[in-house]
Image (cartoon, rainbow, N blue to C red; front, side, top):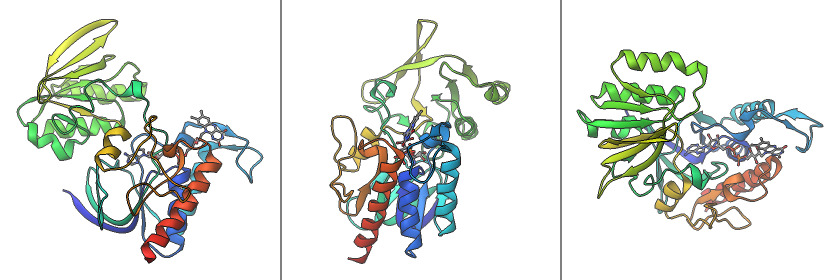
Length: 302
Ligand SMILES: Cc1cc2nc3c(=O)[nH]c(=O)nc-3n(C[C@H](O)[C@H](O)[C@H](O)COP(=O)(O)OP(=O)(O)OC[C@H]3O[C@@H](n4cnc5c(N)ncnc54)[C@H](O)[C@@H]3O)c2cc1C
């Protein structure tokens, strides 16, 4: 069931940039809704930081907790879902997630470092919306009774695979090469439900004429073709697909182009942190998040 949400400022990304922007917006008494995607902030990796002012040394996870606590303390809300589609031109702006249709007066993009070119699967961008999907709830029912391929392994991915099966898709799951032990039980559950689990396989290509028709998978150097009607990719959408479709200007590294006030080329849309490929540091992400939050507030006052 898709719910309708309304906010003053929607912040896409819950890292230092997004949470700082949220803190400024919420503390000024405006509604700040933050989306946290399935790949967590780089701070969640867990490393020691020695160059964030105010701390001689701090574990990055502890710092992230502090950012979250402070943003929430001032009233920011966090929704743990990816932005899947953006309609940013005009007023208001609309963003879709797995379970929500969000209306916002201003949007701040703080999604972190763009997904690297190598991680984008050949055919992924070409067939997005024509058989490639990132959301079981949104697109699963379109493929009822048909063969679909799911790609990815995380708690959320396993849940989405079950959702595909529930709406009547015939699902094959490609897990990728690295399988963390905590997912073994979940994979077994899928097998017991009659699903095909291609454990340790990689998705190499998505192919077709006008729509997705087949995929190429690989294990131990052996390539295999599988006929499918759709491919559900359970990781974040490459910015090149998500942002360019929304009319945002990107540079040759797929970074969002901003001016000194963190304004993008679309009015009422700002970007901050690693997504702009500035200094790729926590301190600069926080600084840019602050400017983006303040500029979003100024935009609301207009
Ligand atoms: C190993 C390592 C060591 C590092 N060491 C240091 C250091 O010592 N000092 C330092 O200053 N910096 C360091 N960095 C860099 C620092 O972690 C980053 O610069 C910083 O985290 C960037 O913040 P950000 O808010 O821009 O993005 P991130 O922290 O990456 O957060 C991005 C957020 O966007 C969300 N997101 C992405 N796509 C979507 C979507 N479609 N919808 C919704 N949400 C989405 C993610 O879930 C996440 O919450 C290090 C990085 C790494 C990997």
